[in-house]
Amino acid sequence: MATKMATTALERPARWNLPMQLLHWSSAVILAAVVAYGWWMTEFPARSQRLFHYGLHGSVGVLLVALMCARLGWRLVSREPRVPPGTGGWERAAARWTHRALYVLVFAAGLSGIALSYTFRQPLDVTLLGLWSLPSFTFGDPGFWHEFLEELHEVVVAAMLWVCGAHVAAAACHHWVWRDSTMRRMLPH
Ligand code: HEM
Ligand code: HEM
Image 1 (tube, rainbow, N blue to C red):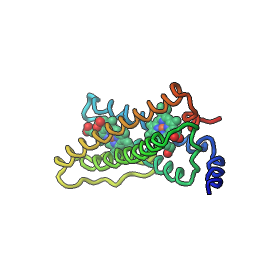
Image 2: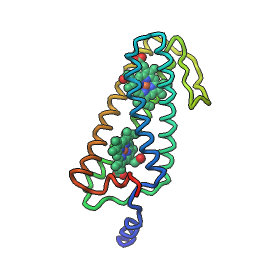
Image 3: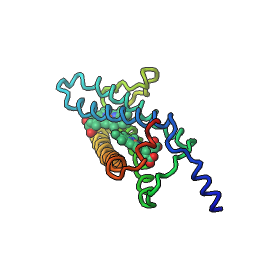
Image 4: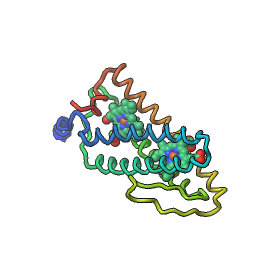
């Protein structure tokens, strides 16, 4: 049994496969763009044009959610790379839970944004790559729900950014301080 487990561990690849790497880095870039655009657009001086920017921000957010769905699906059928030598049990658990939290929080950010988009008196134009539009309607008491979902979207995004910060700091420490192969798991040869 022990020999079989050792053999299986040895057979695992050294890095994440190329589609996983492409999905990881493209979603990281899109996430950074969605956050930066989100902050910028809420400060945009012309109120009349803000809805256009909100719609565009929402459209890129929906694209990110779709990409994260593809990524999650692909991850479930991908083989996890072998653990870098010297990695402790607590480190593996911390990484596993941070990665899970990142998926949950990015989805929560997207879904709270979509719900928020339904609370505007004038519907936002949110599309997936301009090919498919989200159904447009408003629900409940727009005043209450607007305030509530705006707050929720902000809090979820802030929580996601904190976890992202911890994830990036851990990746940097692995690479530059502990000098192990963790970063290379997400980089091509
Ligand atoms: C998927 C990841 C998403 C991220 C990381 C994100 C991030 C942000 C950020 C940083 C802001 C600026 C203000 C704040 O912190 O609340 C914001 C505002 C906003 N987001 Fe998102 N967003 C995402 C998805 C979406 C989606 C899918 C929609 C709509 C379909 C959406 C609709 C909005 C709207 C309407 C606002 C303006 C809120 C206000 O009136 O202040 N977001 N978002
Ligand atoms: C400069 C920014 C980033 C760096 C340097 C970085 C680095 C890494 C590295 C080295 C791994 C492999 C770790 C392992 O296999 O245990 C990884 C995996 C992962 N990263 Fe990042 N990352 C960054 C941004 C992000 C962002 C913005 C997200 C949020 C969506 C994210 C989510 C994940 C997840 C969920 C995994 C686990 C594998 C997967 O399911 O894709 N990363 N990251």
